[in-house]
Length: 228
Picture 1 (tube, rainbow, N blue to C red):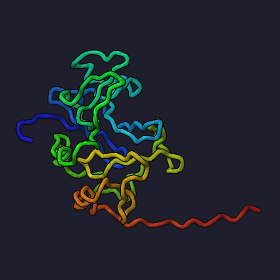
Picture 2 (cartoon, rainbow, N blue to C red):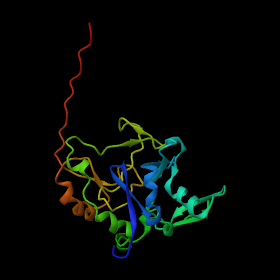
Picture 3 (cartoon, rainbow, N blue to C red):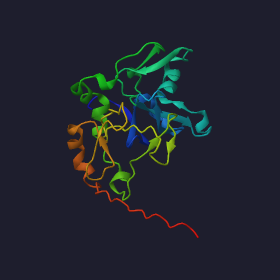
């Protein structure tokens, strides 16, 4: 990280883990007036999901907010015309450095991070930055499961898993791989709460995860006798 000056903003929890966003040094001052959160955007055709940083002026409320990458583009490069969109060059949708943003026609696409070699992904600035963060205290001191979040096609949180479009991101903090198909990733066999895109990420995450990984206890429910 030598020579780099950037900001790392905690977005909160989404798709099974705590998310962070990267900002250029010049944009760090946004934290003085804006609140940030993670927002899950589920493809309405059932083809996976993406996690974005969402920001809103604390004096105006959440209803006036917008995706952080769009806010930053408008701040530094002007408005976004109809039929155009801001894309993340490296496919990491929470890496909102201006160097990583590009304006494209709606019909254009660029390769996603899942299609890039793991070696290149692990050398990305986002991967390096998040690896240096300390473990989330909320996770370290939690007793009850806190990972499961179920979303419908509009990205709204549901109470139960039934009838929900549930997509998980790999639980290893710097990894941004997210399921393209429901239940695609392997689940921790002990706590059965967190999911990983592969054994490499699971092994890397174990030194932290083992501190609060608890064997899942199955609750037994008795059927109530009919009222008489």
